[in-house]
Image (tube, rainbow, N blue to C red; front, side, top):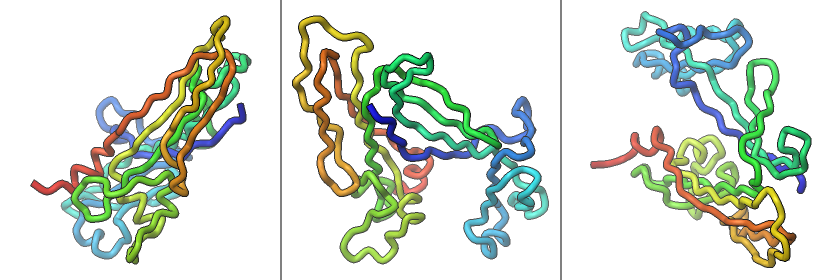
Length: 221
């Protein structure tokens, strides 16, 4: 089983650096700042700042346009499937790379995950509900769309449809898996199917996850 890199997941921490029990911003770590000042929002593209502490200015302000806005650590996770469970055993495992400011820390998460496919729900009309699903928002487009660029498409993602294939860690005597498993669609719209075979029992799962922060802002009563 070859390792396959999955899309990068990135988000700002819910913890404000240096506030309460939250740790202070560390030099070299990627951080994120959002302006709440109307003047800055009118002159600064997107009115956000992303960069390494100690290198980026982080000079955006709160609503009063004077007090500096809070800074949050920018979290970057890469999920991938490996044929190593972390103990040197050849067991397919979902793993995570987490950026710690200077390098990536690699951690095994779940053994027995053989395949994972994610389709992203894109909201084209601004009502908070997905109008189409694609495995690659960077290249998504539809007839007559003049704004289907990678940044805009990703900002319009309001849900994710997750399909995964899990198998037993040990083989089952006198059993052969002859099933073909369906795991959604790929970036071209073609069905993703796998027929792994062997003596492992497997189960395919699918589920829908809502991207709450993006979807709720677009909802209409």
